[in-house]
Image 1 (cartoon, rainbow, N blue to C red):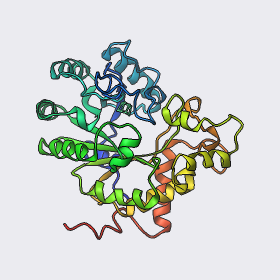
Image 2 (cartoon, rainbow, N blue to C red):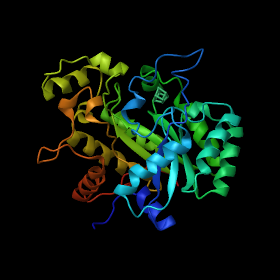
Image 3 (cartoon, protein in one colour):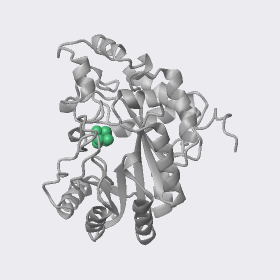
Length: 336
Ligand code: SF4
């Protein structure tokens, strides 16, 4: 296998635990302030449709234990050697409830005999010191506990335009507080949001490098049915790929983010500017084709078949190798 030219989260997990840890998604019935709050119910962020990435076994109509049982059954065929599972509180904002509610839901997951830890996905404005103190206690008692914040963008103008409902300063505050509690901190960033040109996206690498995060997931902008972005585009079904790209440009998506090749180049440019200590967990997201509002732009391999998510890291590594580069190769801005 060729040398990895980026800091891989998967490699870190294997090295630390001697094996891969499989996440099992859980929908614990939480909501989020953008969908369920008296002062700010705007129908969600412009790109969000949680149904698009929720696995079939994951539903709040089932108990957490049942979802974990079904999730393990689902994953064990694909990864028969996996022995350790983490409950992944994934959809919506999984700290958006009183602490007592969080305790009941997290502890039901942790009482499952095959679950050895938690990944808690949430928003930066749904956390406080009391919740972090409790999560830090869980982290001491269990194999691996992490929080994953949706940063999405480092620009308040973008956060405002997508209806995110918090600032980048709120993100910085939440991440710094999480770091004080010594909890593994992951983050999620969307590359190619409307209004961001490629120079702005590359500058985000510096802003992210200056946050005390441990791991990062990058996602391309996907236009998902049922979202405000898909309504803004509203393209006829027979539109050509070029018409679809044009529609993206019209809502302010930069050219590079409208193709697979352009996106991968942008990601490599970003990685060259990202601090080498930050581990990369993902380079792209994948939603089932039935949820894609612009199926004309689905990423395809040379043989015409749809590209799978797990193929993307090798493509990123190959591009970095072609450039004779690596993560952090252009981080002269870092003072440490
Ligand atoms: S992305 Fe997160 S915060 Fe935004 S609407 Fe969806 S669940 Fe809520």
